[in-house]
Image (cartoon, rainbow, N blue to C red; front, side, top):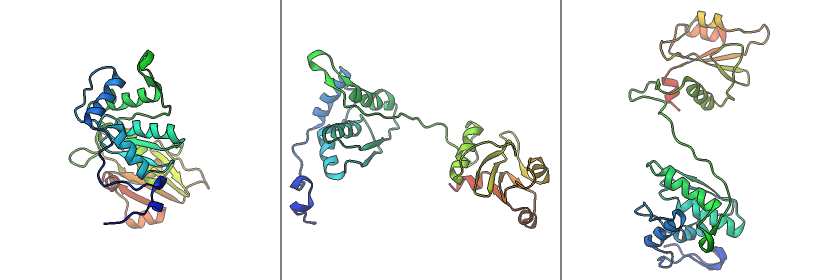
Length: 247
């Protein structure tokens, strides 16, 4: 058992081992009813008073709080409330996979920020902002190949991101995805056919005299050049999808 002395604790108080003063699930259900003006359609919400206590102990004013199982959104509610109380700039990241993510989790955050209730029961908004995202189709199919349902543009952006290059186009090639230092990156991919790194591909590149990047990094399905030829031309070959799945 680790003994925590008073001078080590925030506000001069140590946290007790048993918390019997932070509310129960029925209190959390009541909170949801007030926010949505109807009986809560969520079985096991957590009371914000419980999350408040955790945040007071575990965070600083500029902490980032991650809730991987966001549920009804109690964590975001508590973060916003604590920021409003102490002027903090805490941020939250919520993750929810079930179908109520938009209608309950995200909607609760919106209402808490803007305010809810009417007349004498109106609760002022806590302010703040957040962005709501959904995950698209997986990049790879069950066989480990690139998923044809994913737009090629999104795959290109992903490859550029994993390589640490700023995504963009170039007159050098329609397959160009970006450049880092003296290396230019090309994603030579077509959904309906296998591609190859060969002399035909190299001859298709529009490389200005004196402006050719020292290194060409080329993603393709196959490579028809030898190791000696790759070294001679300063080319690094990366196989699709093998060298993408490594990320």
